[in-house]
Image 1 (cartoon, each protein chain N blue to C red):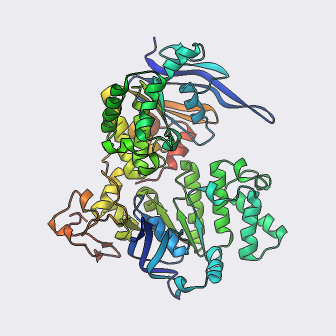
Image 2: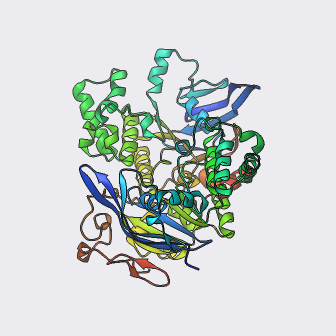
Image 3: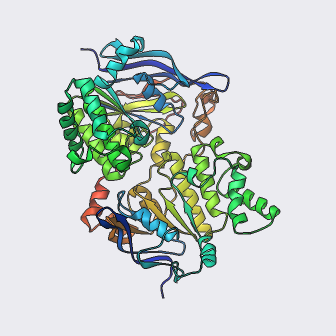
Length: 325
Length: 255
């Protein structure tokens, strides 16, 4: 049985002024049934483009330039659009950050969930409606039989987000790609959505969770790929990247996450901020792309560092990784 | 004698609804002292943003009162209210709400001064440069439009605008929830610097308890229009007594 998802040498170009410039280069990872992989990085790291590219959903301002995306051994990049559309939803589904943009404002939410059930599971209208109510209820919505008749604007942001999750899960996809699914919602709802995705994973669904928050990803994924300026700079088991991050960028992202633990002084404490921002596609420095923001940069960093094995399933692209890693 | 800068006292705010009135706030009291941060936490629908609007004098309570240095905001004459509002400024989640997309950053920053008839052209220019440097923005940002800035720069510009009138108090509604962790850390540090140097009071409305742990002196946990638990940050987050506070804490991703 081939591995569920294999991504190899993936490249994406984006339109910048007059021409195309690379925005994602040489990205590769694997994801098997029931596993969760986190894709982490700041805005501009290329994590969302990577996610959209493997679903074949890149916007017009971007194009896949290289690489292979195999789902159960089939290369998705060479499927006809009709077949690719059938694959999406039935085999792989996307949950987006912004429910307002993804829902049709003039169609009742129950109908939007039911539509995907009819499409992917061949249910009749009556069956699909009953299943939509059930799907909505399973997401912890009170009075789902009544709420499914609401229009998107009549629901809170949290409920709209749950509608999107219900639509994505309707076809029982083998792989769900969730791009910042919980950024816009409360902590309690965030925990609920992630718990629900976790439950589906125990039934064999694979999850690719895209987020800027290492702590969320680390808690809900088996492994994590950290991206910076279009490349994977570190990849490995979540626990390894949490306890012994080797790449200075991974360590810096961790340092930015505020901690819940009480401050010893009782006074507000500065966070260890990572200065600056990710350079834009077309403006990447030669050599290690992180070196301008890196505390550990040395002369060798003017050469691009290859992604090298650093132990059990752990890879890092750095000439001067953290010593205790 | 209370040392509160801004204080809500037994505030109730109801909104009309199909089945009668719905109370978004039902007898809430909370205060922020000089140079300190009060965090209002809770889920959406808890009333925390409604309370924020009352504290900005953008709305009036149905009953109870909001006092600024002991003065009931609902009792002052419109002209005086305008000058009080100058001293309490908002910071929004989405800086798009405080920056006009057709105005350069300089025009957006000067606007509050012009509205309040403060300073001549030269003083305004000087003040813009000063605030840009304080908020860590490069000087050439002044002559750009908001869309030409990065997300982090726009949020800094939103804060810069709030600071133009040297407010005593900021009401910040989810100031970092649209930002990456790295930009969040930069904005948190900026707000802490401001507080330390100017003694600014901050009302922080947030759902991320980790952010609250980092910034707040005092926490009020809100649920369905009431405060269910409040106290010093170390106490509320370190030894919560209300089950709802414990549930919120349990939902926070662990390190």
